[in-house]
Length: 260
Image (cartoon, rainbow, N blue to C red; front, side, top):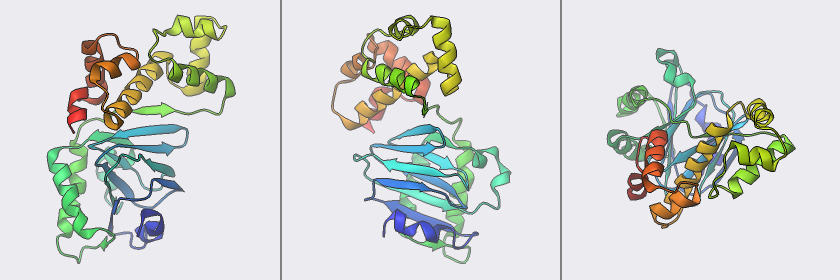
């Protein structure tokens, strides 16, 4: 039974924990549930769209979606297993973590605990079930995993802005900057910066850096392309500067993600 078929079962018992380890469906359309969602991407990349933002979740990372949050999930074709646990919400006010969408690197302990939870795959686990406390302990561990990673791309319906975003995506390998892009679209740098900020609520520089990192993550995970070649394709002419920027963004080196 796939996740789409299981959606009605998630909220049947508000005090339970519903476990689903997904291996087939690649797109789960817009939906919501009354439980918080913990999901771990074992391989490949997953994309979570909430309102006007897309969150990119690389392999060996997990994300938390608060209860009652409408979202779309797309699992990349290179994902091996998509492990999800849907948690009761009666204790969510115990920590701010549970009220915020976030992406986090998974520790070895968390990975092992998530893998063990496969014994409940497709089950609604209650306090009367054996080892229910194991799932409770797993939820309590989540706030200890550090700050969320900023792997987020804002979306917009503005036609002109989407033309700019498409231009950036197609020219990442080029030495693009604020001056060259604003000139290409016949705008002053000041007007361009204001327009960009007003439509996406993010600066041009932050968007460009995020786009470069996301493209790099996808190439690292989906291809066997050498790291130095990936660096060049996303606009870095030095592997060292690319590696440092990647570490600042994801808390791991490109070579670490490739090994994982």
